[in-house]
Length: 324
Image (cartoon, rainbow, N blue to C red; front, side, top):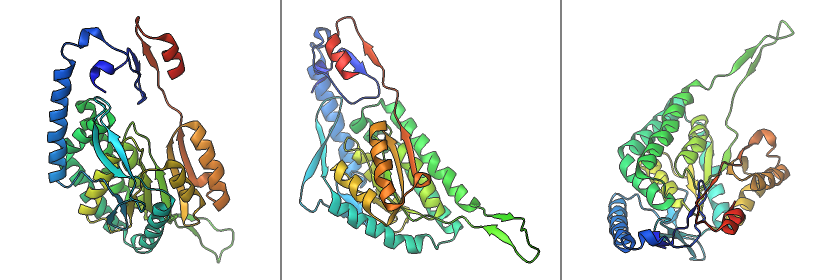
């Protein structure tokens, strides 16, 4: 879809684009669209050269295709062009990612806090070193202006920087005992494998916000990014590997959301679910997690959103109402 197909109804916080025409734009839209295409190719070429344009899932430190060979198109929302085809994974790949994270947990959780902090700090440094490329990638697949996208990289990387320091401050507690020959103390320990399900609107920051604290305290993760914006998640995971985060500590699977979600919920090896998204899906996740004793205290939900419509004078009101 070129810009001439963008509707006169703008949905802030939604990827839904309704087709209508803007006569005032028709004279220059084709040329602008060609410029966008050329710009996209140059950006993807640079990302590919730097190793940041990944299209496979990450399981156990290895980049892996979907087992059935299926792929999923990732589109540039400004033009409708296909940026890349990524592996469309499901339950089988997710189960293997969980097993990989479970195996890695044994060694990652036994590292000292200082060692985990060092790895996170290197990851932060690499995110900042590739800020421009990551910002361009976010703009390509998510659609936000470049300035905001680069700002998200700053914002998202700060979570990793913050938790790199917090890793060294996971303190326990000493509690006064009721008996003279007793000592009571509390040790904080990582729960295990965490499943992180993230939305499309902040494709980097919502991942670092969840993965940063998990890794800091010794957990390992299986990340399921939005099918609309998986490329940023994969690029961030590549930088985590470059930073020396051990294989299996960070895993990324994308594709069939129901199958991936079911695998995360039903696995007894997954001890934590963190989700940002709709209230309806959040309710299903909470109910599904109860079956494997991932209780309320181990399900973190950020639900709902703010997605207003801007309705112009020449908008189709029926389309606007249905979209809202």
